[in-house]
Each structure stands twice: as C-alpha cells, then as structure tokens.
Amino acid sequence: MLLRYRGSEGMVAWAFHRISGIAIWSFVMLHVLDIYLAGGNPSVYNEILKFYASTPGRILEVLLGAALLYHALNGVRILLMDFWPRLTLYHKQIWYVNWAIFIGLGLPAAFIIMRPALGL
Amino acid sequence: MAIYSRSGRPRPQSGGFELFAWYYMRLSGVALFVMALTHFSLQHFLFDPSQETSQWIFDQRWNSIFWRSFDWLLLMMVVSHAFLGVRTVTMDYLKGGKRTLALTALYMVGIVIFVMGTSVVLSVQFPGGA
Image 1 (cartoon, chains in turn green, blue):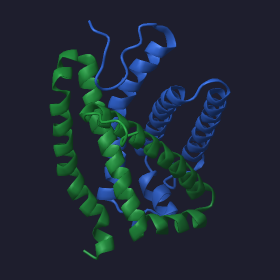
Image 2: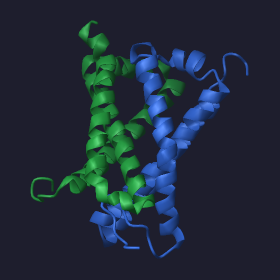
Image 3: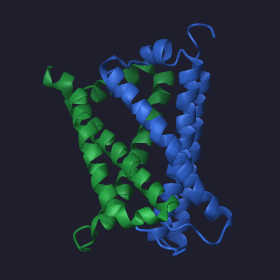
Image 4: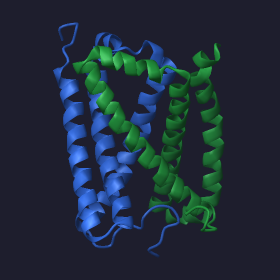
C-alpha cells in the first residue's frame, strides 16, 4: 500500500495511524491476558514478566511506546483538523511538528526503557 | 462547509450511530491521550518491568482505589476506542459474509477482554483490607 501509492504526508499519516492502532490493540489483548494471570496464576505471570524485562522484551516495549506516542500525536492532529477545518491548510506542518515532538520525547523515553539492558 | 478531511474520516452526515461513533472516537481519544500515556509512563519510566511482579501489582500498584479505578477506566476506554477503530478498518476492507464473520469475532474478543479485565480488577483483594 505504502509502496504502490505515491501519497504525500496525509496518506502516510493515515496509514501509520491504522498500523499503530492495530498494534496497540494487539498488545492490549496480550496485556489483559497477562494481568488476568497475575491474579489467577502469579508464578506463570512472573515468568512472562521476565520476558518483558529482558532485552528483546524491552525492544518491543520501545516499539509499543513509539506506536502509542505516534497514535496519540496524530490523533491530536486529526482532532485539530476535524474541529478547526481551517487548520487543514497546515496539515503538513502539523505532521512535521508531530515528528519533532515524537523524536524529542521518544529518544529519551527509549533510553530510559533500554537503560537496564545496556547495563547503565 | 466542505465535507472533506485530510486526516481522519469526514463527520458522517447520516446522524445516528455513525455520528455518535465519530464523536466518541474523538472524545475517548482525548481521554486516552492522557490516561494511556500516564499508564505507560508509570510502568516504564517511574517503575521498571523488572520489579513489576504480581506481588508488586497487588501489594503496591493496585493497593489503591484510585489507581485500580484509573486502570479499569483506561481499559474501558481502550476497549471501546479499539473496538470502534477496528470496526472501521474491517468495514473498509471486507464485505458481505467475511465482514459479518470478522465483526462477530471482534464483538466476542471485545466482550472477553472486558470480562477478563474487569474480573481481575474486582476479584483481587486489597492487602490493606480496604
């Protein structure tokens, strides 16, 4: 879809919004299952937790955080344009501001999540 | 006003459930912006997964009416927002019998996640006896 259609920022923003939304929903389903186990079978949950705290687990958590932050920021972009239609004229600028915020908040966040795995 | 949008979905002109869903996605989105990012920050920046054992959850994290209610409300928001979102995506790509099948599966998963999440929030005792 992304490769075939030479869309501009709006198209990519839309596709990423769907992909990140579905990724977050997949994690929420897993997360409810693991918390259900935390109540029902703590030893199994604690085993799952070891994966969450491992290096591959942390890499996935960085990706989850990225999906969440992207979806949240682009959601604000959608709201701005839906409720103040004149801002639609600046949809590309808002998209680039979003990426600036994404990188500004995301890099330190990724560092905090990965720190134990890096031995820091 | 022109009915077009460069971002999401144009506001449905039909009214009824589709219009409700359109507003609901946006309002729950605002709530989730605050609640989901707070929850993620709490679990990953303030605390670390390596300490979040089931004992920690029930003795510390959920030994508070406020945080337990917060997490349950977050779950309700996320389930309803994701349900309507996946419904929109499903209806964009599937038609006829496949659509009915996929939407039925989505309903079932939504109900199961709602019941499992709610039961764990309600059934675990407060160690403090609250």
